Length: 143
Image 1 (cartoon, rainbow, N blue to C red):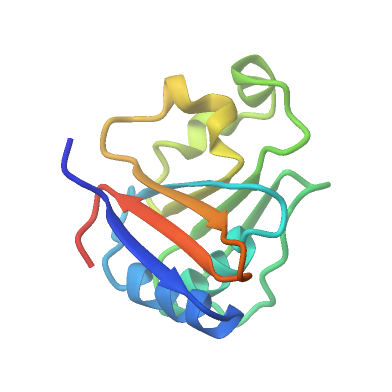
Image 2 (cartoon, one colour; image 1 turned 60 degrees about the vertical axis):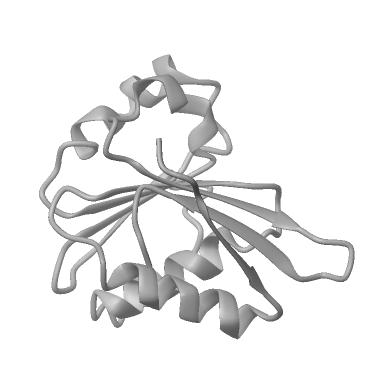
């Protein structure tokens, strides 16, 4: 596996801009795995990706709906697995089908299903630094 690209962002707008840059590299069938603690910027990154896909709807973390679908230049399937226990729960909501859909599948709290993610998954790990900045490690795509 290639070395990850590591990016530090100092603000929400920088994290969102990173999402926009990442979004320009995504195509049909792309899967983006987002891991990190609450408040680390997963949904902010998702908003930037959605902007790159020309999605005009407001992007919100689908914590209670679990899956939100948006239409843009590519369909975006935005999942939040925070409330799921693991692969069985994921299968129960039909999540596996969306791993092979034609659009972009974006999965927050993806560590809960890590063992079933396809090899081509773009893996992003966000962490909060002591100064409030974010360190974002990206594997599977070159920016």
